[in-house]
Figure (cartoon, rainbow, N blue to C red):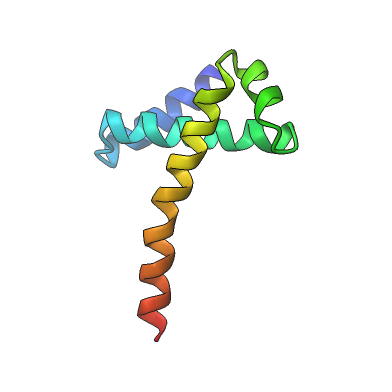
Length: 79
């Protein structure tokens, strides 16, 4: 796994991805995958990740809020 992560990091550095963006995307995908494994159950996901349920709830709400303006922009572009 370490070799795959190092290769990914090299690719991200070549693409000039900022650390904050990389961390944010990693966290988002990690939580989404964990939620899928736990059938969207927040408490089970929080336990699996070793964080409080409120942390997962707040992050999911933020991701959904982040996605809404993108969806609106996409709808506006097709009209």
